[in-house]
Length: 114
Length: 116
Image (tube, rainbow over all chains, first blue to last red; front, side, top):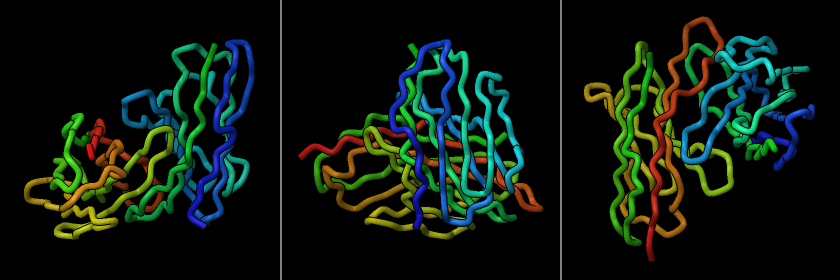
């Protein structure tokens, strides 16, 4: 199983709503990532969890709140978003070692903030 | 900091043409290098990788060789198909020692269009 599963695939939310994006992998990977991708742009790193601990936060606004309940699950909690936060949100996972291995990406959640 | 530079395109080719997408990088450490492909409306799929100098990654007819002396990782395919139309991202990861992961540094992506 080399899949990273993201739910939902599409999400439309108002600026006052609270919602969560979910990501799951069963490859035994101990690093998990959230990326944001705008149209015609490369993915931008938001957060990295390594062994269930937040190791990197790329100065992301507090309206985005990550959570890693266990080694297989990663959530991104959203509240009070702005229309400019509309994007494709990608989850990825990999083995964290002293030599890098490839990251596996999910299909993404297409988020629209209205 | 680390960076990846690649031709942005769009690159338009006819079916069965030879493909080269250039990628060069700057890294403080000794990175591993990747090519990812993104089809419309989908996430990123790993196409190929190389972890040390002179390694050649290959998959589905695509190839790229890790050239440390020129800091390059150019993507090539001998005969492209319409189904190869997608966005291709060159990326690197430059891990610190002792475990952990710091995510990927991506190039801006190259939009490839193959015409029948």
